[in-house]
Length: 92
Image (cartoon, rainbow, N blue to C red):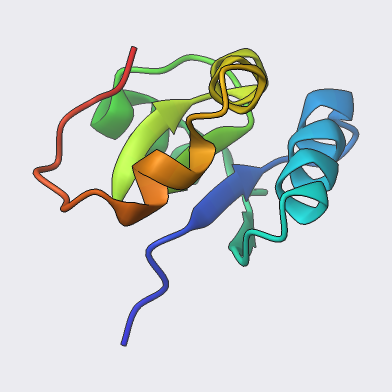
């Protein structure tokens, strides 16, 4: 079974480190996928319509980056995202 919580990261990215800490603080299990090849970065940016890293997918749903994940946490909505059925919608 594929992990539904994925964080795409790149090296030397403080926001990548911060989002991993944030998810860990909320005891949310996730798979980190470190992106190193330029072609992979471009493919992900096109796939998700997002230009920066990290790229956070929770419960199979693209959330955004650190700021969007932090905003959900601050509103107490991270757990709700994890419980909701996925429809592939982008949260914004």
